[in-house]
Image (cartoon, rainbow, N blue to C red; front, side, top):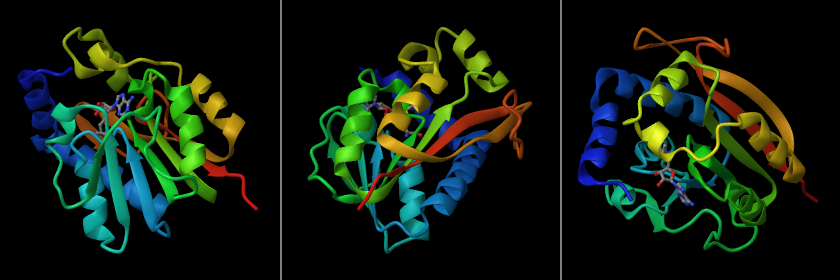
Length: 209
Ligand SMILES: C[S@@+](CC[C@H](N)C(=O)[O-])C[C@H]1O[C@@H](n2cnc3c(N)ncnc32)[C@H](O)[C@@H]1O
């Protein structure tokens, strides 16, 4: 459970110039990947800042944000649909979403394998799973992980992103993997270099009729 100070610190990051830039770039990236999706679920949405941005760009999208932290989800704007609950037991019907999104959340989910199976269940045939993970090879990650007070160090559950990708590939056809969002000297730069890119992205498709 996060305390008040930890939540404030988390939100303060997104209020900083650097945090705003990160959010802008992430939202632009996700938007480009989910353009034609109508019903979108974001698992581990936290304060759902990216999801709210996405819904402003695409008012026609039905976006649901889910998180198992009450402290996080109460921070989210009610302009999108919000659900409190665990990724390992999704409270949605089979075949109900066009896309399921994880923005730096799958690696924070203890039972991520159950979450991947559940994602498969709730996605429509040929639906998309889009997973953005913190890239452990990046300098950004290494610096954060060295700090014993950081959110990342305190909360991350899995740091082997290759293993996560392998597991996803058991359930989905992997359409793309890439590195994204370079960070250098506290600024975002366009770089796909694994040492600089803060995110590792996996895109998969549910097998369909
Ligand atoms: C690093 S935060 C990312 C939040 C948000 N996506 C963002 O980009 O700011 C990880 C999130 O995953 C959520 N989380 C961890 N385990 C979860 C679970 N089992 N079910 C749902 N959400 C979970 C945490 O509560 C937290 O909000």
